[in-house]
Amino acid sequence: MYSTIAFLLLTNALTAQVTSAIDSTSIEIGEQITYKIQVETDTTNLVVFPEGQTFSPLEMIESYAIDTLKKNDKYNLVKKYGLTQFDSGAYTIPRQKIIVGNKTFFTDSLKVEVNNVVVDTTKQGLYDIKPIIEVKKKGGNWWKYVLLTLLIVALVGGILWWFIWRKKPLSEEEQIALLPPYDRAKLALKKLDESHYLEHEELKSYYSELTLIIRKYLDEKVYDHSLESTTDELISKLRLLKDGNQIDLSKETIKNIESILKRADLVKFAKSAPDIELAELDRNTIDTEIDHVKEVLPEPSEEEKLLDEKYREELERKKKRKKIIVTVAISLFLLMATIGGFSIKYGFGYVKDTIIGHDSKELLEGDWVTSDYGIPPVSISTPRVLKRFELPIPEEAKGKVKMTSFMYGTLLDVFSILVNTATYPSSGENDNKIDLEQVSENSIKGMESQGAENITVLREKFNTPNGAEGLKTYGTLNIVDPISNVTKGGNYVLLLFTSENVLQQIIVTYPDDDTYADQVVERIVNSVELKKEED
Image (tube, rainbow, N blue to C red):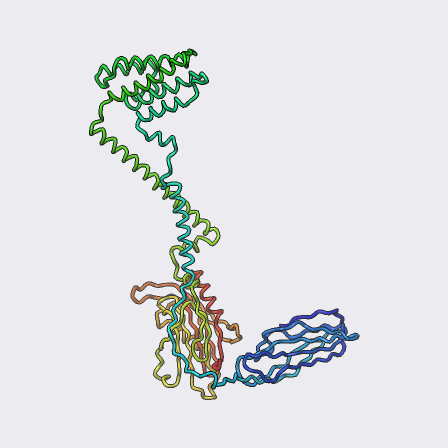
């Protein structure tokens, strides 16, 4: 690929001079050298310099901006590149292609010696290679999700406790409502004294409050229709209760209550205006008669006390049940709202798999491992570390073929990965004659021998990111579990590479109709790179 440096483009192209040079012909491993291309040409010409990794086997690590110097009617263009190499040896920088106008020029090839870094063993000791040690798997980011979940639960719990379960401080009205009827009536009389009705001669309001106090007390303790009864109805009922020996009210008490209630009716409905002193006297009379009524009330029986206790307990249970129902309803609403919000953003399937769990999703989102397997190395990224297995070698190949295999899972697990490297004896005449299509056929037969059925086969050329060419075989298959005899549908990808007397094979099997598994396999396949043995 090339980058274009545009100047004024004309059709004519004059002669140009192209030279190249490097600032050093001998470097140490990893040291940078500067490769310079200098072009002297007419100002009307278009100049195209090389870009990308065209300096192989050296690696281009930086491309500098073009330095332009104008001299009369010519341009002197200088393009510099930073190159390096991480392996020792003698290397040749290939000729580079430069286009000037409608002509093509090539630079000279240049040799570079890359030397090992000399270590002074008198100052730096040399030690044996450390043995392989077991590496603990990273914990991942699970703690962040746990912390976020705990914060959400704490927030919701705090809201529910504050608004539903917290014992709220009682208001003044609620505190008065919890008092016994007698204490409530006495407190109401005290509040009436603190009012300014009599000072402002608001007798109607005063008598309304006064009669309401006695009626409420009688409604709760004597006759439960006292509030809605007329004065005559209430007095008749009190006399009837007295005559029936249900309450031992004196005639004087009934008469006093009747007198005050009728006077209040006159004030409220006939606009009567008694003296202030009489109103105060009526207030004191009501206070006294409330005491008299309390004195003659019969003591509640044990049965009544028990019923009253059960009533309070039932009332408390209903309150608690109501709190539980409200708590559950709010929790369900918040849960459904959260799930709905995430479903809108990420899709219901993704949210369901996140909550319930999904094997392929856990593989996709877990900590991946990039490692080299076999000799020559196959670099591959996988969701799990591949473990070394000794696969059986046919009798006729024992002692001739060297094989290393690394696996995760098996064909019966539906999801599995196999990286296999086989080195054949070099006989000169048979080198580079491994038939990948024949190997592919044999691999398909091998999967069939392990229980795979109805295998579809598609083949195409495959190139790794670092330019290695191979054969890709892929398709669908059915796998029969030998224990349960259950047939599972799946897919497979087989990658084959050969170089000289080496055969490298990668097999991935995974379940069908699984978007997470598709992404896992795509990531695995795209990560495959082949390395040279010396790498």
